[in-house]
Length: 582
Image 1 (cartoon, helix red, strand yellow):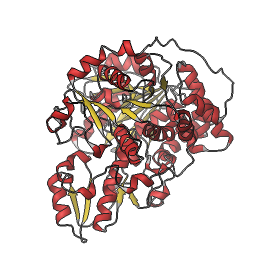
Image 2 (cartoon, rainbow, N blue to C red):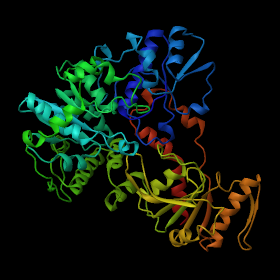
Image 3 (tube, helix red, strand yellow):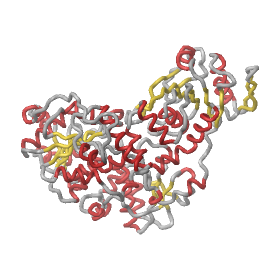
Image 4 (tube, rainbow, N blue to C red):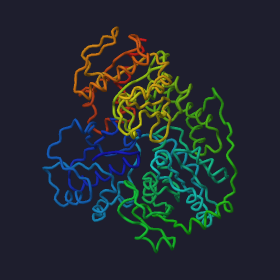
């Protein structure tokens, strides 16, 4: 079973594989290749107390005999109807790709009635979740999940009118409700919805481990207002129904007929539940119960929002100062409602959490706090300390590679640039792979991950065969470079001999490679940013099999740190070598 996506997506894929394996008395093996190849979201199943199973960390290097690909509903039906112990079945798609087939098999329905959900628990003590449950125990509560980040780039965000309408719809029916907002962009949410004594903005201030706990916090609320495209909120709704909390969720029914690839599914909710939607009835018990608001209802209730909800603008206030230390419990209490605090104050809270983990020597949780921090002078010092780097790289660096960029992953030389930038180096990453440049001679952009988090270095994609057209770009961006790092494996592996003094280069390879490599070398000579001291070739190396073989079971990965350290190992060796030679 291929595991991909964030926490909720990982869990639902695991569940599907688990249910099929239980039914067919087969072994479940998880393919975790995406995470061991730099996927921008961390592996999170490691937090859960799940039955142990084997894992694969690189599917491309794993020999699997008699493998059958299961990529759509037809393949799924064939597998389930003609299951053979002599075959190995590989499911590498989203659940929606199998929805037509799965609808025929009740034993594979991942609804709140299955015992697995009722027994589900974390491996570790959930201090924040426990604090949240205590805070809400005497309240009528609504969890509001606003998914942004990568959804903004994909065009999947919900219209704010829906959220305004959903809040007003619930307030009209249940007076005295308290709303708890959860989001990967709480700053935007606070500015959009404003301040109110019954609005609470929740952040565990605890990295990815906190994000996992927040999903369960949402499940503790009686009602939920959810993004229609996010599996995170849906999973919280199912967990809540499994606990028999007696509530349901509200979702947007507008444009529900429009199928978003990978998110919409084959079932057309708008047609199947047309009468129920018009009657404002709860449907989809298998998803924990949902009331869909149609366009007429949204138009009606969004106008009532300012009548039933008294809000004011968010101006920002400080609750902590530099040097002030807070305990873990104090941070948990603040996190249940971070209210009107400034972005700078939120960063100080994260630093506090980080320092508390430093005090007890918990490197795994330190790393998760660092991942949530913006890259600035404060975090750069913390990153250097975490990596164990003794000195800063004080010269501007250009990293040059021809690797193919993947917006979903931070790996290879792109990741090495990211680590250097996190530790305070001035980095420019030059990519010579001209795919996706749409015929342009050069493309320049600020590096960021799919959630929009800035990585604090600049990316230049160049068509090096057009040096004259790129002359201005090269002069402007690379004139200050003090060290040029070129990937020998990708860019200069065919160089037989280099005579720097006489500016000659002897290449081995086909004509296309000769042109690319020759242009790369001329790039630095022609515009006078290369000399013998600046120019260094490094090989990124390969992870040896013995390291990979240590990770064989899901229980071998007790924290995302295991994956981080695995994929960063060679890059850190390179950085230490560079700094040692500076």
